[in-house]
Length: 231
Image (cartoon, rainbow, N blue to C red; front, side, top):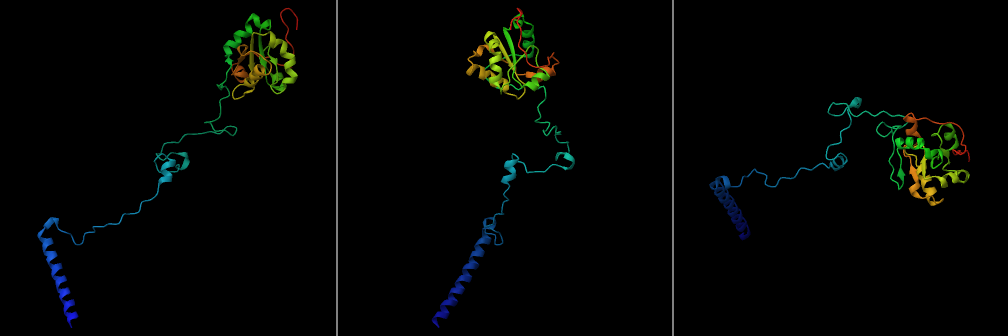
């Protein structure tokens, strides 16, 4: 019996406490507690867009519009494939690639002057074409000796007297991204003891020479003759 009375007293006390609390809350006006307010809201889940942001520098990944236009409505960059290469990467046939190397270079204009120099007729200036026989016979710079970069054992003994005599030795290949002339310069310096200050690299090569409409010779390689008539 005493237990039932105690429970009833607790219920009454709880009800009185709740009533007193609401009364006090109403008295505080704006500073009071709002009963239906959510004081512990749950955060909304965030989408993980990190992959598209990283790949596009912070912009969403938007595909190209139909017809090759950009999303803004302006035509996108046009690329025309030629011989399997895009227009952005296909090199121009007249391009002269400036490769880093340790040798002196000679320009087309300087080479033209050198060919007209009387010292060239005396074999004191020598031009060497390092392309193969098929390419050499189809056309080469007038007066050029041949020394196939990949057959040095065949050609070096033939041209060695001219190399030893010359003060300037001009080496060329197809030009552009062809490195055979550069490799031949290194072969002459390292393997055949030709001083570097006598070696000149014509970087433009056969491509630039023909593109500029310079005169050419055709036919197989033959030994040069000096003005005195000797070989």
